[in-house]
Length: 367
Image (cartoon, rainbow, N blue to C red; front, side, top):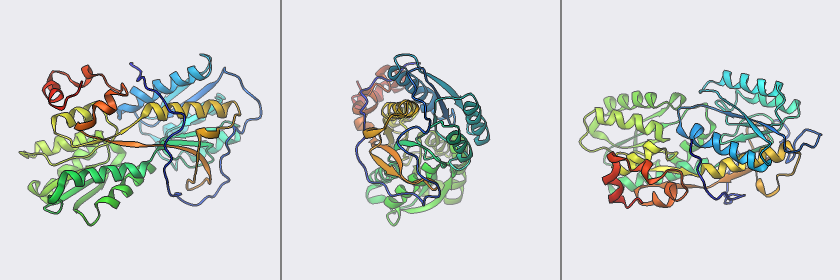
């Protein structure tokens, strides 16, 4: 698997986020709760939520592994498990890692509430926990993610830009993410802040498990209820669902596809942007987020201060003042592919510009 090679900033751009909920437990500190100082011979548990979205296996796992190796002079190792979108499985995986005495845990939760019990067990065992990408509940020690509400703002603004003066000439469909993912709620909130009052929202769905096939079925239902010629745009919370939505739109026989948003800059999503089937995606620098998560875990495992690595304090529904780092996001369209996924070596030109997309790449100046 090819590793993306980018220059990683140690801290992210400062952004303003509202606290999300009241505290019920004491907040995580900036040091590991373990008393013994540890060297480089570390075992870091990595729990990722699913393998349908390309980022987890293609970017997050190898990049976090590489960064842990770099930070521990080649001695540290990642103990990895993927829950395949099953919260019960993820709890079992976490409990196994706690029993096997990993030195720290990096957790991207399937269900932010369901994982809280395992995080509490880790705390009791003196194992620090980094909440990765999603703000898990329970006594976590640190958190790194993107500005998730801003993601929704970026998507909503882009859809309005695509619609222009036709924004109220028909209906849009909103395809939000899974209700078990706290980020989905923030994406939705940001998107509604941009879209409410400026478009007619004909149908809106919370898509079970973020699955493209569920988005496809929802879109088929929306087209049947609203009429295919009445749908002028689709807010899709990520690229995987956008693929399912676009399949439904094409199957309905639309001569011209309405603008569809996305997120994650997946290879297929970027190629759809090049071909004109998808309007935009949200590019998030996984290498930057992954490097921060790895460094947080290593520092916490060694009982070191996070310092400037966690410049913010955020509240989860259960834990107040979590040391956090929030990474900025970028709206990705046909116009800035060179300056995002190509520049950061997420994809090569050869990967993007296969024979099917060669003409579209040439027209967009992708090189």
